[in-house]
Amino acid sequence: MDPRDALDLFLTNDLGVFHCTQAVMQTMLSRRQGLLVNIYGNGSFLRPATPTGLYGASKAWITSFTRSLAKEVKGSGMQVLGFSPGMLLTDMLTNPAVVGESGREMMKNFGFVLRFLAKPPKSAADALVKAVAGQRGEFCGGAYVQTLDAPDGINPCRLGKPDPNRQTPAFELRYQEAYRSKYSQE
Image (tube, rainbow, N blue to C red; front, side, top):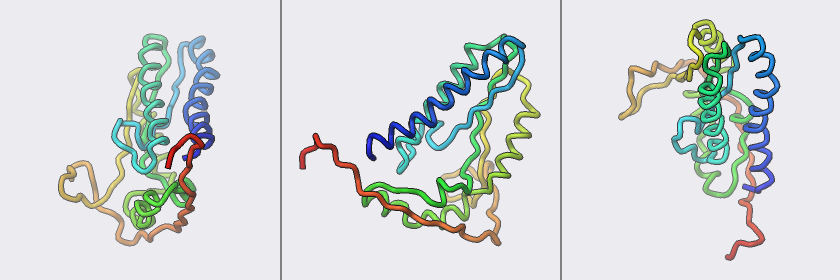
């Protein structure tokens, strides 16, 4: 990945959360109330996020930041919620850019995978409303679990059945050549 693209990703995901948090905290803390919701994502739970490793690292930062913030504001009246929406049918997933040949090979059947794992954004919004309504403590690390048939080794108690009528979503893979640093040796 081009380092400039990586910087943009971290500026958006991590510094965006940081600046937004600073903007709302003064009001929430002075009123001794408020609910801050940070959105987790692939990588948030410290599992490999291949082939989106840098995105996953940025989401892991958000998880750590959210949990640390919750500890720091404990007793202030402010609530913190970490929410994982699962795979959502957004442009990021239906029109992804992959870098390098290995990324292209890994993602070639991703459109089909989206049929079973991805949900419309409204389903995550509904789950978030329920999580917020049930938020009583100062911190909740809520997770929204997607449904699919349980392959071997996956706990079927946490999973449901896919909708057999759901169509494979429109999917277009954009390819980028792997970044080569001017300092790398071939």
